[in-house]
Length: 184
Image (cartoon, rainbow, N blue to C red; front, side, top):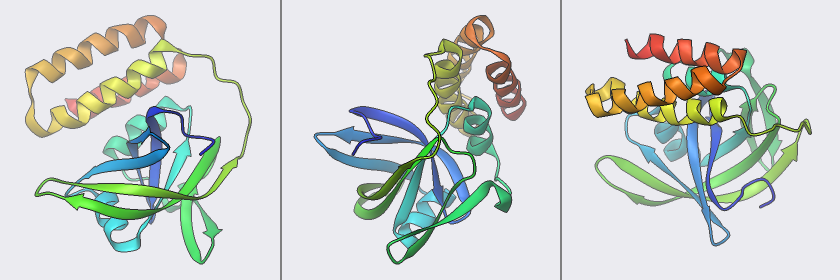
Protein backbone atom coordinates (compact mmCIF):
# COMPACT_ATOMS: atom_id res chain seq x y z
CA UNK A 1 0.00 0.00 0.00
CA UNK A 2 1.68 3.12 -1.22
CA UNK A 3 -0.33 5.83 0.53
CA UNK A 4 -0.48 4.27 3.99
CA UNK A 5 2.62 4.39 6.14
CA UNK A 6 3.39 2.24 9.22
CA UNK A 7 1.54 3.41 12.32
CA UNK A 8 -1.84 5.11 12.59
CA UNK A 9 -2.71 7.14 9.49
CA UNK A 10 -5.22 9.93 10.14
CA UNK A 11 -7.66 10.20 7.23
CA UNK A 12 -11.18 11.28 6.48
CA UNK A 13 -13.03 8.03 5.91
CA UNK A 14 -15.98 8.15 3.55
CA UNK A 15 -18.76 5.63 3.33
CA UNK A 16 -22.15 6.11 1.65
CA UNK A 17 -22.51 9.93 1.72
CA UNK A 18 -20.81 10.05 5.11
CA UNK A 19 -17.42 11.36 6.21
CA UNK A 20 -15.59 11.04 9.51
CA UNK A 21 -12.01 11.34 10.75
CA UNK A 22 -10.62 7.87 11.38
CA UNK A 23 -7.24 6.41 12.21
CA UNK A 24 -6.21 3.53 9.96
CA UNK A 25 -3.84 1.19 11.77
CA UNK A 26 -1.19 -0.04 9.31
CA UNK A 27 1.30 -2.55 10.67
CA UNK A 28 3.07 -5.56 9.16
CA UNK A 29 1.55 -4.69 5.77
CA UNK A 30 -2.02 -5.05 7.06
CA UNK A 31 -4.58 -2.30 7.57
CA UNK A 32 -7.54 -2.15 9.93
CA UNK A 33 -9.87 0.31 11.63
CA UNK A 34 -11.70 0.35 14.93
CA UNK A 35 -15.24 1.74 14.63
CA UNK A 36 -17.67 2.59 17.38
CA UNK A 37 -21.32 1.52 17.50
CA UNK A 38 -23.85 4.21 16.83
CA UNK A 39 -21.76 5.96 14.18
CA UNK A 40 -22.82 6.25 10.55
CA UNK A 41 -19.42 4.86 9.56
CA UNK A 42 -20.01 1.72 11.64
CA UNK A 43 -23.48 1.18 10.15
CA UNK A 44 -22.43 1.88 6.56
CA UNK A 45 -19.37 -0.39 6.63
CA UNK A 46 -21.40 -3.15 8.25
CA UNK A 47 -24.05 -2.81 5.51
CA UNK A 48 -21.96 -1.97 2.41
CA UNK A 49 -18.53 -3.49 3.06
CA UNK A 50 -16.38 -0.62 1.75
CA UNK A 51 -14.62 2.56 2.85
CA UNK A 52 -12.51 5.21 1.15
CA UNK A 53 -9.57 6.79 2.97
CA UNK A 54 -9.27 10.44 1.91
CA UNK A 55 -5.93 12.16 2.43
CA UNK A 56 -6.71 15.80 3.18
CA UNK A 57 -4.59 18.59 4.65
CA UNK A 58 -7.45 20.93 5.56
CA UNK A 59 -7.78 21.02 9.37
CA UNK A 60 -11.34 22.37 9.15
CA UNK A 61 -12.50 19.18 7.38
CA UNK A 62 -11.19 17.07 10.28
CA UNK A 63 -13.14 19.10 12.84
CA UNK A 64 -16.23 19.49 10.67
CA UNK A 65 -16.56 15.78 9.87
CA UNK A 66 -16.07 14.87 13.53
CA UNK A 67 -19.19 16.83 14.51
CA UNK A 68 -21.27 17.55 11.39
CA UNK A 69 -22.58 15.92 8.25
CA UNK A 70 -21.30 17.16 4.91
CA UNK A 71 -23.58 18.07 2.02
CA UNK A 72 -23.99 15.59 -0.84
CA UNK A 73 -21.98 17.98 -3.06
CA UNK A 74 -18.95 17.22 -0.88
CA UNK A 75 -18.72 13.73 -2.40
CA UNK A 76 -17.67 12.33 -5.78
CA UNK A 77 -18.76 8.89 -7.02
CA UNK A 78 -15.93 6.53 -7.96
CA UNK A 79 -16.41 3.15 -9.61
CA UNK A 80 -14.05 0.58 -8.12
CA UNK A 81 -14.58 -2.85 -9.64
CA UNK A 82 -18.30 -3.51 -9.37
CA UNK A 83 -18.83 -1.02 -6.52
CA UNK A 84 -19.73 2.65 -6.57
CA UNK A 85 -18.02 4.40 -3.68
CA UNK A 86 -17.94 8.01 -2.55
CA UNK A 87 -14.78 9.98 -1.90
CA UNK A 88 -14.35 13.61 -0.87
CA UNK A 89 -14.29 16.33 -3.47
CA UNK A 90 -10.88 17.97 -3.31
CA UNK A 91 -8.99 15.14 -1.59
CA UNK A 92 -5.25 15.25 -2.31
CA UNK A 93 -5.27 11.45 -2.61
CA UNK A 94 -7.60 8.57 -1.80
CA UNK A 95 -7.53 4.83 -1.31
CA UNK A 96 -10.59 2.61 -1.75
CA UNK A 97 -10.94 -0.52 0.36
CA UNK A 98 -13.32 -3.38 0.82
CA UNK A 99 -13.80 -4.34 4.45
CA UNK A 100 -14.02 -7.55 6.41
CA UNK A 101 -15.46 -7.53 9.92
CA UNK A 102 -12.96 -9.28 12.14
CA UNK A 103 -14.59 -8.79 15.52
CA UNK A 104 -17.48 -6.98 17.15
CA UNK A 105 -18.09 -6.12 20.76
CA UNK A 106 -20.92 -4.32 22.52
CA UNK A 107 -19.10 -1.03 21.82
CA UNK A 108 -17.00 -1.44 18.69
CA UNK A 109 -16.09 -3.32 15.53
CA UNK A 110 -12.65 -4.07 14.13
CA UNK A 111 -12.50 -4.29 10.33
CA UNK A 112 -9.62 -5.30 8.10
CA UNK A 113 -9.10 -3.38 4.90
CA UNK A 114 -8.27 -4.78 1.46
CA UNK A 115 -6.94 -2.20 -0.97
CA UNK A 116 -8.83 -2.00 -4.27
CA UNK A 117 -7.57 1.28 -5.75
CA UNK A 118 -5.48 4.28 -4.75
CA UNK A 119 -5.07 7.56 -6.59
CA UNK A 120 -3.02 10.70 -6.03
CA UNK A 121 -5.20 13.55 -7.27
CA UNK A 122 -2.94 16.48 -6.47
CA UNK A 123 0.73 16.21 -5.60
CA UNK A 124 1.34 19.06 -3.17
CA UNK A 125 4.13 19.33 -0.65
CA UNK A 126 2.82 19.88 2.90
CA UNK A 127 5.46 20.81 5.47
CA UNK A 128 4.86 19.55 8.99
CA UNK A 129 2.76 22.07 10.89
CA UNK A 130 2.43 21.55 14.63
CA UNK A 131 -0.85 23.48 14.61
CA UNK A 132 -2.34 20.96 12.16
CA UNK A 133 -1.03 17.98 14.13
CA UNK A 134 -2.51 19.37 17.32
CA UNK A 135 -5.90 19.95 15.65
CA UNK A 136 -5.97 16.19 15.02
CA UNK A 137 -5.23 15.41 18.67
CA UNK A 138 -7.62 18.05 20.00
CA UNK A 139 -10.39 16.71 17.74
CA UNK A 140 -9.89 13.16 19.02
CA UNK A 141 -10.16 14.40 22.61
CA UNK A 142 -13.14 16.63 21.75
CA UNK A 143 -15.21 13.78 20.30
CA UNK A 144 -14.79 11.95 23.59
CA UNK A 145 -15.27 15.07 25.69
CA UNK A 146 -18.72 15.84 24.25
CA UNK A 147 -19.82 12.35 25.30
CA UNK A 148 -18.70 12.44 28.93
CA UNK A 149 -17.48 15.98 29.84
CA UNK A 150 -14.36 14.49 31.47
CA UNK A 151 -12.30 17.46 32.71
CA UNK A 152 -9.03 15.60 32.01
CA UNK A 153 -10.00 15.59 28.32
CA UNK A 154 -10.83 19.31 28.50
CA UNK A 155 -7.37 19.97 29.91
CA UNK A 156 -5.83 18.08 26.98
CA UNK A 157 -7.94 20.08 24.52
CA UNK A 158 -6.79 23.31 26.17
CA UNK A 159 -3.16 22.16 25.99
CA UNK A 160 -3.46 21.43 22.26
CA UNK A 161 -5.33 24.71 21.74
CA UNK A 162 -2.33 26.59 23.13
CA UNK A 163 -0.02 24.92 20.61
CA UNK A 164 -2.50 25.57 17.79
CA UNK A 165 -2.63 29.27 18.70
CA UNK A 166 1.17 29.42 18.77
CA UNK A 167 1.99 27.29 15.70
CA UNK A 168 -1.09 27.26 13.49
CA UNK A 169 -1.98 29.35 10.47
CA UNK A 170 -5.37 30.79 9.51
CA UNK A 171 -6.96 27.40 8.69
CA UNK A 172 -5.77 25.82 11.95
CA UNK A 173 -7.06 28.78 13.96
CA UNK A 174 -10.42 28.60 12.16
CA UNK A 175 -10.56 24.86 12.85
CA UNK A 176 -9.85 25.52 16.54
CA UNK A 177 -12.69 28.07 16.67
CA UNK A 178 -15.03 25.49 15.12
CA UNK A 179 -13.89 22.81 17.57
CA UNK A 180 -14.43 25.09 20.57
CA UNK A 181 -17.92 25.92 19.29
CA UNK A 182 -18.78 22.21 19.23
CA UNK A 183 -17.58 21.47 22.76
CA UNK A 184 -19.23 24.38 24.58
